[in-house]
Amino acid sequence: ELSFFDSHQTFPALLIPAKRTAELRNTLSSVILHRPKIRSVVAVANPSDIKADDVDIKKYRKLILDGDVNSVWEINETLRAFLQKEDEQKQQLHNKVQKSTHTIKLGYADLTVEETLRKLLPVREIPSAF
Image (cartoon, rainbow, N blue to C red):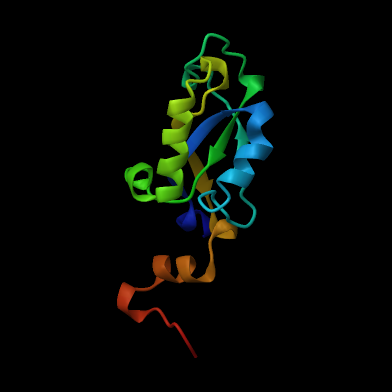
């Protein structure tokens, strides 16, 4: 049964103003989540995520990042430099980038062959070459 492969995975994300989406996708292309069939930019579903005076969720997007949600903010130099630069610019609250997370439901169709084998076989028995 394929429901065995279903899991929820939390990724780090940035809440960004919708009008800055293209700019930030280009700037942060090295840290954005790149997975087949999974979008790296999604609409904001929960208005309470946004820390701004104007809480119109249509004006914001979530940019999903690759990496561990607990350590990506400190480990990734590109991301750390970008966030420091954003803080120094002292932008208005409605135009500011905010840290967040995003949970994605991954199913059998979303997994790579290696991820599928890791779920099925003991760790030491995954073939890497034939």
